[in-house]
Image (tube, rainbow, N blue to C red; front, side, top):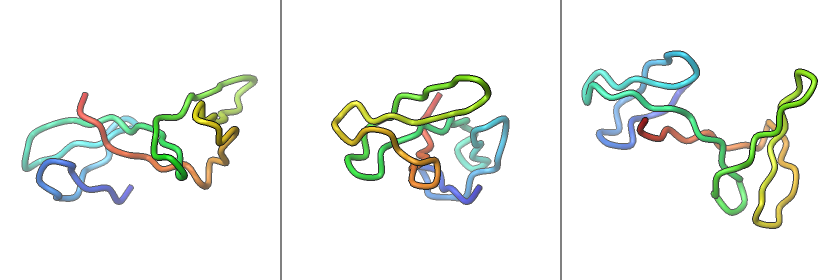
Length: 73
């Protein structure tokens, strides 16, 4: 994971599907967002598969296109 802290812009350390900033001493979760409208995606889980759906008219979004953004917990 190569993501930076949204507060101080330093690189986050990966922890349990999220990130931790040593500088700010804050934990972040990763939020899936639409690559077209940058709004949060609905996560659909069924039979072991994970799909992402944009409720703003962009439909199903491929995992390869999803933007993961650090958000404070």
